Image: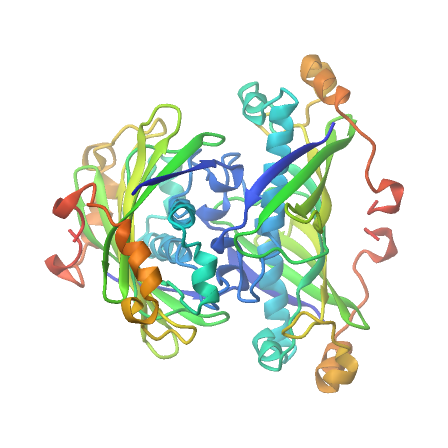
Length: 147
Length: 147
Length: 147
Length: 147
């Protein structure tokens, strides 16, 4: 499964180079995975209500073309790995009008409880695990890409 | 009592107009009041540990001159009112090198407990109240300024 | 004229109090006025292309109820004053589902050129001025509110 | 050469998990490289004044322990590669009091002109290149780490 979320670039996100500051792409990744999870029937908020938190363990972004103020951009999100207490999301950010790629990247998240201890999601919440497992797809970039 | 905190303007804080985006001044206000409270012997973190939270009820900023990347700025903070479950901080942000004013403003904060219910700080934590009361100063701008 | 823009609260916008950090409301004001101007036929980007910039001169927000992660919020925006080189926007932020008010506030913006010098918009860009003038409405709060 | 920059964690940087939101670490990387360049005698602002800009081409962060509100953290920065139109910075973020690692990562930046075209820094600004080259150190993690 893939899911595409839309976002309008704000003034707050630009910097004095006239383009979007590089940390914002990681916030766009968050938009992507929130909408992905909602579309997959597992809103992140429900995970937290069930005592499951997903701090980020790794984050990577490759910047290809600048994003500019007021552009409509899209975040194309997928889950490409799910094992043990970890899940890996991949993202491609594109200019909505042209499809030109702005950035691509991934995040690895851990499943932990409220105290920050790892959770074996498969055991602790088999229904969530099953839903997640059913939407895992192959990586767009495969092994060539960043460990 | 007044307290002056320093901050170096970051690239992340600028926007495509080439100056600092206006929401960041409110984050600088936060730096100002955190350092004020530390200097007054009441680190904000200790308030939270004692179950006192201070959500912002009102915030105002008047922008006088732009702040730019890499400038050293200073946030001059004071408490100008303390009554019931409310406290009012005032701020003047200046270019550190020239003293030229960048912005001035205020925030009003409420004292609440973990559930968000108002706390009469004077009754609940008389020692905190007394420390705060002892550092209240007159408003720099007085009644002329914003309600 | 009023315009209502929607926004989904992100994790990045929350703080450790479990609610949205107070500076983010000013970014939501930006969303409000960008969508207002677009709806009024004067996209902000076109203003900049014509050499008109609108730095914020004053900003105020009164916080009424917390906004929380993943909520859909709406920013109801209007222009309530336009004179000389200044324009005043008013905002009401509400929970989209219930209509309960999260915050209300205003910003005053100046019209300046690329060098930051004030522009008499009425003279310099009469077509823009006329469009803006035609959508001015009365203040929701009137004189009772913040200077 | 290594350079260590200090930063006090702000409330604005936390999220409802009670720790620092993951995009902020990339802003801390910016603090690290700004202070590194200043210490190396090449303030970033001067690069821009000479028409050299350094957009980020790649960014990576591995999160090891959470950072919390009001902690003093340090960003230990070095340059580990410099070739053609690219430069690679490495960062280790630590709790200042304990030295415990919060995160480690890198950014790759391009040298471009105001129009975004690649600059061969060695040819265009040999003095800058020489200063940068003289402070390149070996990677802390070597080849084992992230492409």
